[in-house]
Length: 88
Image 1 (cartoon, rainbow, N blue to C red):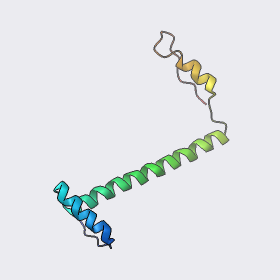
Image 2 (cartoon, rainbow, N blue to C red; image 1 turned 45 degrees about the horizontal axis):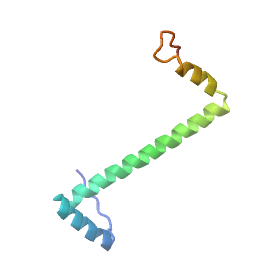
Image 3 (cartoon, rainbow, N blue to C red; image 1 turned 30 degrees about the vertical axis):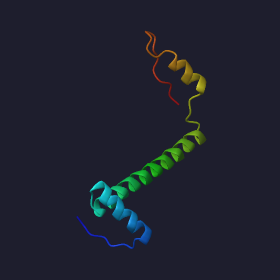
Image 4 (tube, rainbow, N blue to C red; image 1 turned 30 degrees about the horizontal axis):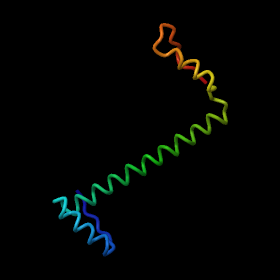
């Protein structure tokens, strides 16, 4: 495990200290947990952006399925005549 130094605003330091006491956790544990959550959230945002860009490229290249085709396919779900998913 590595050590990183950073400046912490006074108000955050107080809140961190109080939270650590209430949770009976170390300040380091709380900081690590907060960073994990932040990084995971940012990674989700990046994935969403990439997926959106891919979807836009698919639309621009006419790699789409009409809503009507999708609805017709969905209506067969769970029936003896269930169809395969439509392809672009």
